[in-house]
Length: 156
Image (cartoon, rainbow, N blue to C red; front, side, top):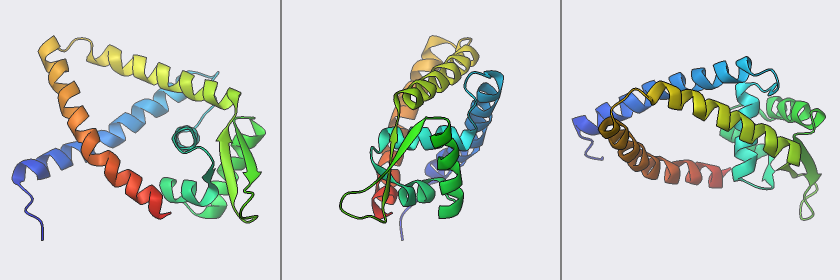
């Protein structure tokens, strides 16, 4: 059994509380920019495929926490929009590999830039010291969380 401190529990609670708020902000930004025409699951899919070139449909489904048929329908829509390509793996005909198209990379970059700009506007009134502390804290948090998410992706 691990020795979890009260501070670690508070930090975890705040991080979990913040995640839906950030997704809500992302949803608002995606809805506000008609040129993007992306849902949050589509955005998350593009982001995952960008980070995991030649990711499988199974990896994506596990990452998004959805069934394989639901992930397949999601990818079908992105394929129709020419945002991703689907290819059959040369080593396993049952494996479908996903890759971003140039248009998909552009859509993802635009979505990230607009959401990041919106969040930066909301943070702009904070004192510089508070912003520096946020950067430091989020950097530390990311180093703790990234290895967990990579291990989960490797298992799928």
